[in-house]
Image (cartoon, rainbow, N blue to C red; front, side, top):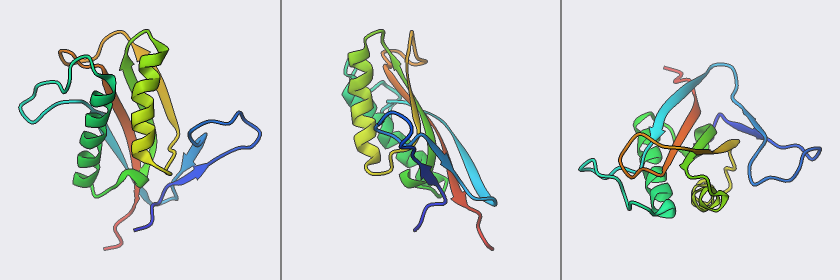
Length: 137
């Protein structure tokens, strides 16, 4: 299934591991996803203290929310990655897992260090917006 999302790159800007912008055609349906959190089925936080494991769990959560919405990772038009840390290395650890999870769909993204997230021991959260073609029915 082809995505409605078109990633936009610019050779006039610094090289980056993501597209600088993205569009979706008129008539696309936007999907605004709640922040994907690193929670287990019982509500506990995945791997306290482990940025990479929490980023991986966030990707799993994001993919399930997308499936429930009739979308896939290639339909994501932008992300915001929140990492509870003042260390750039921790942000990069989380980013590397998430960037790898998206594969060649290098969606426009913002990576932010924050002071705290909503769940006990939570270190990573992914906010996303997706776009899919409107159902022609």
